Length: 277
Length: 131
Image 1 (cartoon, rainbow over the protein chains, first blue to last red):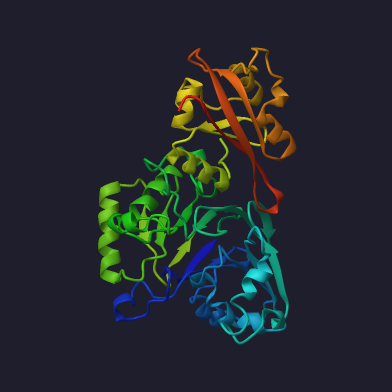
Image 2 (cartoon, helix red, strand yellow):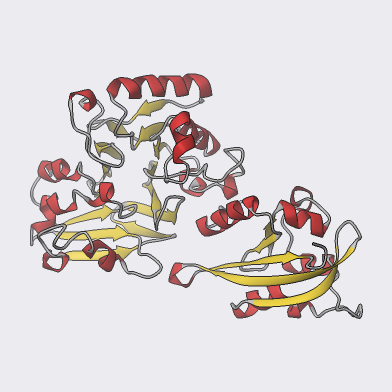
């Protein structure tokens, strides 16, 4: 399994010279299997470049959305395969308690926010996910609702050789007096347990988190503590705060790793980074 | 050890911060958590009791009516809520794990999630005349 990051930024796209190294596009990750299968995780602004990079000839693409906040769907309308009548696009994402996935997507994918109606997208197939499993080509995909405002899932993707967990927007420390607590009472733990690679929300510093608890994101230290609790083999921090420039991400990551001394490698996620599992 | 659904995790987190006693059970009726205010009434810390199967906690507190007659376990509000997926309430006596008998009032509500998922129930209870 090969993981490629196309967008790593949280909340809002943040292009500029000061973010050029880690990247300014919002969440999008490509997963490739050994047999050539492909999954796209989230449709932030990074998905535009991913769509443009794809070779011709494929007939189906699966886009797995964790939730419908703008930074995770804003690029969807600019994903070229979506408008290719020869390609079947499967969109996976959470419904809410009151609205199905289509109704929720249409709120963005229709005027005045977007010029094209979702109903005019050819070959579109929607799949609602919450807590469950699905086999998508060569991938076994487990989803579960996680702690983030509004219906939000994380994904655990397994092939014959590797397990990859994707928790880009996740606040497992919310309301936990002493984080981390017990594994079975920790949001996302079952998805991440023993994973070969975990991509996890690491938006804030400890000081920033104090004023933003409940916004749905983790401090970098929380990401490291969660990864240790889940006994992952490697952590890549993700969903960097828009206000954190390249130098800040270098410094904050180094400080957090020095303080936590995790028994696994930690890498700050960057656009263009590739991980072979 | 399987991870609890996120709705149950958030319910427990809320209960941790509330000043009223809260008791949470899963769909099988297993007691999975009660908070500190509940510990005062139940007479023992949750860390000491841990999770308890439905028949165990139903009997452990020896519920009776005002006349001291044992209640049918199936008639306890939380058992009614679990069985019928509807709110239920009642006033009765229990004997805490500290051996003290207390008259309590209970309201139980079902925890039903999207897509019809049954997550169990929670009960709020207190000693209305002890305040």
